[in-house]
Amino acid sequence: MRILLLVADSLRPDFLGCYNPARRTRVVDLLAADGARFETAVASAPWTVPAIASICTGVAAQRLGLVRWEQPWSPAAATLFSRLRAGGFQVASFVFEPAHLFFKCPEAAVAGSSQDPAAMRAWFADRGRGGYFAFVHYWWTHLPYLPRRFALAEWDARCKAQLATLADPDPWRREKNRAALRELYARAVDYFSEEWLPALLKVARPDFLIITADHGESWGERMGPAERPRRIFDLHGRHLFNEVLEVPLIMHAPGLVRPGVVRGIARSIDIMPTVLALAGVREGGDAIQGVSLLPAMERGIAANGPAFFARNRDFAPEEALPESLDEAYAEIGCREGRWKVIRAIETGAARAYDLAEDPGERRPFTPREGPSAELLRALDAEISQAARRLDPRDYTAVRAQLAQLGYL
Image (cartoon, rainbow, N blue to C red; front, side):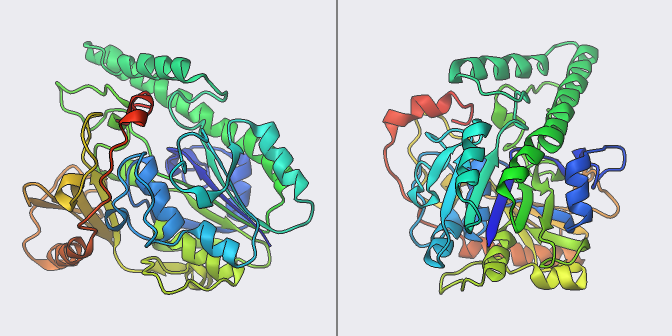
């Protein structure tokens, strides 16, 4: 079997035609129509490292404790890579830069950069008709939303210039600049769907294709009048609103996956057990929180319990790695059905949203009774189970380089 897990960075579902009739992304839309499209899928974190770690382990972000690029992955959480390799699959991953994503997860078997499409396609061509599991982290839907590889210094300069447009002191110009960035982002999504993706699929020819994202994106809309986005982390990473947590989830496998729309809420942690189930590989004895989505695709509805997610603190480059839950996370939340609750770790304050009545999450309330209070109890039980001890180490040598990415 040939399995391709494609994670497009910062890809929002509402910029794909299969989720939003005002858009047209022909190739992705056709794959969604011929496969299973999950109506709502929720990421485990609003930025890349914890979000992708959850996808690859089936464990929610707050239990993994991975909140920094330079942290080693815990040996206690088996990865999709190790499980499939043990099941006889040839494993490889293609990331935005081999020196960053997965550089503390050697079992991911990084074979190159997804920003070098020709070399990546050559790897797939060399597989012939043999089986494989490949993880591809697509980068060009991430700021600066341009489909070419940049040297780090130029990439950093372009991102800072774009962020500066969102800090314009004039409100009218700032809104105009935000609209221009959204349009550039839309064109980046179009390129992903209409040019990059078909060229890859032509040579990869997967039997089982998953298209999803690590997290969504925003452009400073939630900031107060005096606030301005100054780092990439301000666009995704600083809050837990749905625009940075909801992701597309499409599974395409003719003859293996029943086509249709799957209602309810799926979770990014469900991807790993779904792949293992379809590949016929046993999960093992580790505490995977996700569950296979194969039954959900058969019945057309996903009902796997609360979707937990976490936002870590914004760390300064000189700070040591966190050693406890309260040092690592700013907020942890969960969503089930129409209800969403979030607790601030430092203060203990909790807020809730009724997404049926308030889909824009503009009217938070204190969850004192009813379904929101019940969900808060489930959240608090999860918080009590989350990782309390992380892996503190001094990675001073790599912090300067990682800071250039805008996340430290």
